[in-house]
Amino acid sequence: MLAVVVVLLGLAALSQCDPATLSQEMIDYINNLDTTWKAGPSFPGRDEKYIRQLCGVREWDRKLPEKKITPLEAIPDEFDSRTNWPDCPSLRDVRDQADCGSCWAFGAVEAMSDRYCIAFKMQVNISAEDMNSCCETCGNGCNGGYPGAAWEYWVRYGVVTGGQYGTHSGCMPYKLPHCDHHEPGPYPNCSGETRTPMCTRMCEVGYGTTYRKDKHFGARSYSVSSKVTEIQTEIMTNGPVEGAFRVYGDFPTYRTGVYQHKSGSYLGGHAIKIIGWGVDNGTPYWNVANSWNPSWGDQGFFKIIRGRDEVGIESSIVAGMPKKYSP
Image 1 (cartoon, one colour):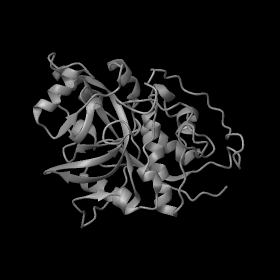
Image 2 (tube, rainbow, N blue to C red):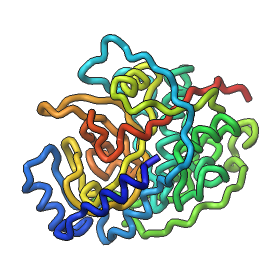
Image 3 (cartoon, rainbow, N blue to C red):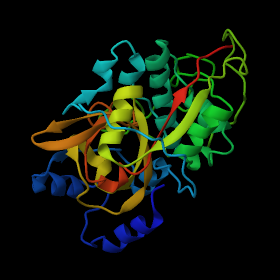
Image 4 (cartoon, rainbow, N blue to C red):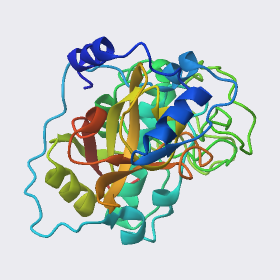
């Protein structure tokens, strides 16, 4: 998915003069560039190794079948899934993967939840806990996984419902507690614990149905080409998609604006949910939901430059269509 060759080339080109990840020097360097985005303090007390742990997208040696998409004739300059489908609260929700490299699962279940609402006018929160802990073909839970495999698993085996940590919402809410990925924030500092919770295949006590009966399935899964108009058409037609990109040392300090890579070493692959696009002071961007809780970045979201496959953002798009739930 995130080509090894490209990564190695990026590493080879890395300047030894780059400021350290998460350092004040990195923040000052970015802000002094007068580029399209601004940096700020993030991940208090953490280091580069910790960010690598959060970047949980692994290389995958196969690709989902590519969907044939005919681009819409009229694609607007701006589109936001949150305003286009205002009755779907999951579109505005920012989840928290906590101290776990489960971004591959979060990007998938967030987009699946949105697509259920868009397709069937029913809001369900597909469980990141079930996907991360129970999908044996998806990778290794908190130690990383494959976005494409997550969408395949949804079609073949289904995924139960489950909200965020502490919500007691759905069959299997997320078991890892919120932690701060930003400074200041409302939660304890992230500790660095990354052990994958055990797969129980059981719903919370008091939930009204069984694990097996709560399974929600996909009708199909697929990849989308890297052509901007095809990605836009897919989002406008069916809802947000999951994407992945290469994270470098400057990205964790993102605060506002349109991100483009300027400095820092390669840290790993990270999965996210793309909800729309726009133009900011002449710079075209994708609008993206991250899974580092709302205290990171721009209230949990970020913008990244659109149209030049910046750090691979347009070359790893996966999605799928939901099957109507029938217990």
